[in-house]
Amino acid sequence: MSALAVSNAVLWIVVVALSLALLAVVRQLGVLHERIAPVGALMLANGLKVGEGAPRLEVPDLDGRTQSVGGARSDGRSTLLVFVSPTCPVCKALLPVLKTSRGSERDWLEIVLASDGETAAQREFVTAQKLDDFPYLVSTPLGMAYQVSRLPFAALIDAQGVLRARGIVNSREHLESLFEAKRLGFGSIQEYFEAAARDRAA
Image 1 (cartoon, rainbow, N blue to C red):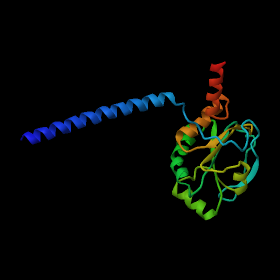
Image 2 (cartoon, rainbow, N blue to C red):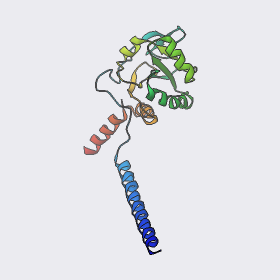
Image 3 (cartoon, one colour):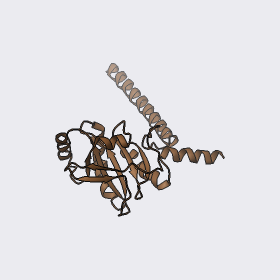
Image 4 (tube, rainbow, N blue to C red):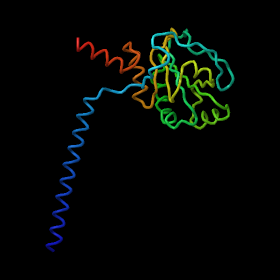
């Protein structure tokens, strides 16, 4: 019985020690979270410049109809051009966020999906992921014009056809950072924080 009591006491000491260690880790994570600025869409050093006119192209959609991308819109809405691929797992994980944003931001934004490759594979992708409500463009020149090197990649174009934000979008936070960057008048959230830091230093 004494051995059992000792083992139970040791186990309780271990449990209490582990609980205290876990609380310390959780507290440290909270401190780090407060210190780290929100991460926006991952900007690429090269490529199109925010504030310039977006490339305007006439490209086919999945049904073979010609769609105009990059020019001014008569309805006053912006365009979020999102480059995806049927073979990109991160793209598939982002699709529910795009579907939600399509509904919540529809007053000022149209989301257009773009890809390249075989039409049959694209049709399977659209059917499997239930993307029939999205305009879906299939064009290699479109990706080249927007200098897309990694996926998923998004470009936010305002109603006048000006590129307002762009970057790699791996999560909801990345996607929403593009909207916030446009609202603040910056090319990215990182650019906004850099400007704010310069203002504080001055």
